[in-house]
Amino acid sequence: MSNSVPSINDREFNQFKSWIYKRAGINLTPAKKSLVAGRLYKRLKHYDIPSYGDYFKMIMDEGNKNELQWALDLLTTNETYFYREPNHFDFLVKHIIPTVSASGQFRIWSAASSSGEEAYTIAMMLMEKMGDGNWSVFGSDISEQILSHARRAQFPLVKARNLPEMLLRKYCLKGVGNKEGFLMVQSALRSKVDFKNINLIERIPNVGLFDVIFLRNVMIYFDTATKQKVMQNLLPHLKPGGYFIISHSESLNGVCDALKLVSPSIYQKS
Ligand SMILES: C[S@@+](CC[C@H](N)C(=O)[O-])C[C@H]1O[C@@H](n2cnc3c(N)ncnc32)[C@H](O)[C@@H]1O
Image 1 (cartoon, rainbow, N blue to C red):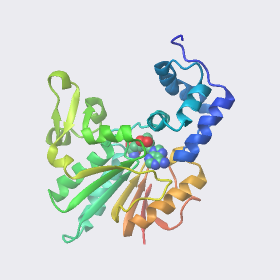
Image 2: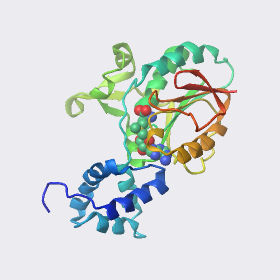
Image 3: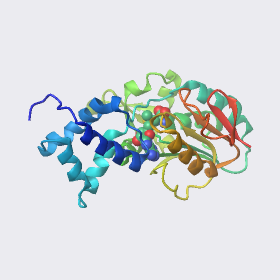
């Protein structure tokens, strides 16, 4: 098999498209054909399988649960970094944290956390303002592989290039030797952050109630019906008065009218 990526035909593409829609709610448009081929080709090469159709057949076989997870991991987009869309963290620091009562636990959910940079950034804000108090951050994602990165808490330094230097110095250790070029999130911060595999389009396990839910840069992959379902699944886990934060490039128009917009891309439950 040559190194150039063979194209995926319409029938093969539609097989993966239907499967990933059913499994994760991700809506692959035809514009994603070469991206899908490029990502899956690694597995074809790995198994020396001649076509995407044969690979699809293989992952659907009963004994191939691991390979299903692998294909899922390849077809999800995990791009993330520390201190992404800083306005949200400013809002958290200036408008949410000052209202937190001293009694009771303050909990934030980074839903679709990817490798955890969002969850650890939130934890830095909370540690700065609330110290080692009664707070915790919960991160979740559908991809088990990406969650293992999140739990390891080691990141290429480039992922922190937007993070204020002071926070980088205070909460991250600089890798040396074979960890050169990486940072490790400090253990006091790691101990406040937990990760779990959760599929947002399925019934949400018993995760309790949250004061703030971040759901950023994932709904762009969903169609309106899936967005509505995800909101129905998540809203019962937001406390009355709690905040719901989406990306600046996303919108809840026509998706959910149970929340009040309080600042661009920041909503509140009444
Ligand atoms: C682009 S990342 C967003 C990371 C982070 N929230 C941010 O804004 O930087 C999108 C993540 O959504 C996850 N994802 C996609 N479909 C999902 C689903 N149905 N349930 C849970 N997570 C999902 C992907 O695995 C991926 O890690």
